[in-house]
Image (cartoon, rainbow, N blue to C red; front, side, top):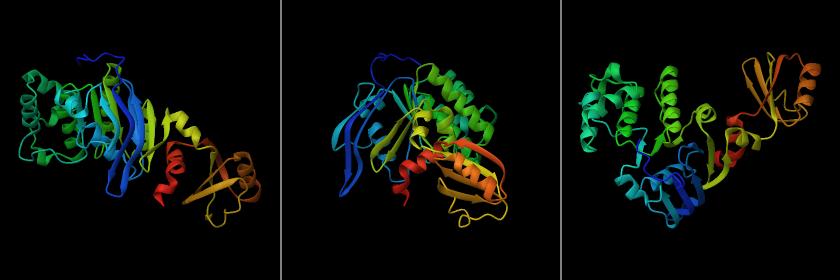
Length: 303
């Protein structure tokens, strides 16, 4: 990675950004500053404004109000300079080319040497399918191919949309290991995902967007702390959400087979009730996870 841009320059700088589509305000005053080398998860329900925000970072849309800069450049200029690459969830592949031919064609477009082709294929974990037609590749392999193509311009900012869709567990682990290695070398990564455990495990910073506004921004631990309370998990055969609706201290109850999950602020009171008033066993008390925070902070968007 060249990293010619001075480190004090923000990788991404959005200030008071507004984007409207007719009467719909997709992005409503977002201000966001991302430092070089950060790995940031951009999360939110469908329609929250994530895609529109990403489109503006890629220069595909212009804000109606506010400022968008990528490494001190207008997004369109940053893309033209090769500072930004994106791995999208679908499209962009020619099914009748092999994996290697696709990467080689992309390398030619960016004026990269032949050695860059093998390096990108290796980093994306595609060496064993380099000769395979793209149309014969699995969904996860095709997503890895998009990743290899995005690496060729050696971007300083990599934007990922559902990057591990279709990958198996081992593939997802290898992918994120490569991403974290890039971040240690200074590459900035912004990713959107429905796998909240990936955001929890691999993001330096989590940003929740709801109705075009940022509602939470911080480390995973900081964001999880916004969803106060704990979860009491127990084995309780025959239980139903109706039978547990009067548990003191509970604000939400889930029943999955013989396992109950009781969420609330007073875990001691919940545990006491389950142990003395029901046949519950194997109790476990845990802090709220990122999924709980997501539901708590975006609940009104989902309804």
